[in-house]
Amino acid sequence: APPEDLDVTLVDATGGLVESALAVNEAGNGFRLVVNNGLLAAGDYTLTIRGGENGVVAADGRLLDGNGDGVAGDDYVASFTVDPLPAGTAIVGVPGFFEDAGQDVVVTSTGGGIPVIVTAPEGVMSLDMELFYNPALLEVTGIELAAGLPDGALSLINVITPGHAVVGFFSPQPLTAGSYEVARLLATVPAAAETDRTHVLDVSGVSLNEGLIPAIDDDGIHVVAVGNRAPTGVGLSTD
Image 1 (cartoon, rainbow, N blue to C red):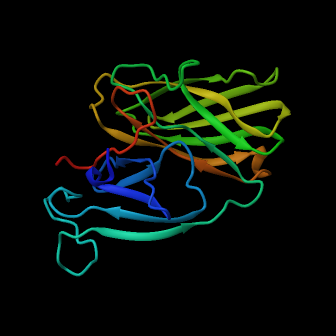
Image 2 (cartoon, one colour; image 1 turned 135 degrees about the horizontal axis):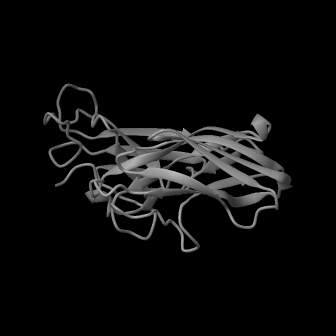
């Protein structure tokens, strides 16, 4: 969607729109903006949340008071700076995707499942992470080891409760530097999932080589809809 049709926009220092998507929380009283398939590059950014009747409106009908002056109806605008990652920091995450109700999740053309992607310097031998998601919109059922990994590599998953899974990976040999899949999370979208609902795939507690390689997480987002690319421009309200 063009920027003027979006309720929330994020632009870089040149004014370029950053592709991202919204996920309203289960309580319906807040949302997260998730950047599509990757982290924000270092630099300056401006976030705008649209006010007015066609913008972000509270469940009880109250309009946004973006500048906090007591008069509702104006935009909220904030600027911030993203610093470069420290040298040697790895990134572990999952991509965003569309998948409709009642379907197995297929994110790439090379097979089913949600890829767990690591971008790291040389030497990764183990990964531990947690994944939090909305179980009304996604059911994680298992895990498969990604292709091309050393003989003897293992991937493990334990769904602690619906909406909370613990994932593990081990390789008997250090992996080379680069960006690669280590596993695929097997999942389906419940038949009762509401079309156009979104939720964050919240990667948390990432540890590589038991913490010896510094790492940060990269969350994904799932839109319950038919599509063939990462979601972008998901509106919060309907004009």
